[in-house]
Image (tube, rainbow, N blue to C red):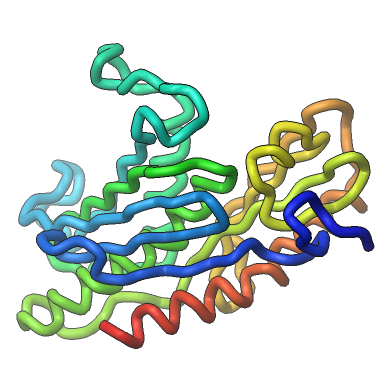
Length: 241
């Protein structure tokens, strides 16, 4: 297999690091650095729940996602200034929320909401999966705080969760796409899975022409293998809390 413009092998991740406890005031936080992509994730604990959960003893996890105006090469207007949320942001924040709720026992949170804010400081591809990777660490820190305050009895996690991108660029399967690769991809795939190897969500889109089941399986397997170092970095980060 050949190398890419940044010197990586096709199945090699970009440099990847999670810094936990990055913000002073949030109950949980993390800075995620994935190549040139930078995302800050912050968790706030709120003593309220959606109306449909009242009286159930269960909590809730919700997410919000946004990009700073100069996260990209040209300025993107703030969504608040436009008076509406863009469809892409809405889709991504729902994905983040689903990913986190899939691995948390909501009845272990009590009747409270953990609100996860994911803000992209710099975007070079893979922002949605980077947000999930950091959000898990930030959520873990917030839940650990609830345990230490004796507000919940134990950590509510069933397992860890992380995301990864892969794609077909010039006919070549590639892992962890940067923006330049993503913009040229004939097939773009994002997956979310647990450290037990279980899938939470897979998003695959053909940009140029339909793709075969074999190509899909190839990229899915590549993405799942690529999650190993991500889970290891998450574990390193939470071990320091």
